[in-house]
Length: 134
Image: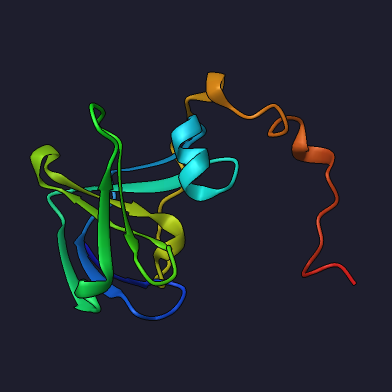
């Protein structure tokens, strides 16, 4: 069991999570691509974890896509995705990018690869830069 901390981009929201990460998935479905604005979401799943908002809980907004299990929690100021306490499923879903703490787990799988964007394939040969291009 570990103690992890995280925050949003603007610093309005901060949290602590006490628990263990059981699974770590990259999801390529169209919904995750839309909410992340990227090729996939990177989510950690912490069964029976305890989530405590340490700052800015009043800045936290929850969105549930009607008639689905798809939901997102985010900072209403900057839009950063934040953990979702899925009590009905007995777990906390943590977007990996919002963590300020290191984690000791590696991704378990890429999910929904049939929905993967056509530009998200064969990327091994793409140039890798240490920072922004000059």
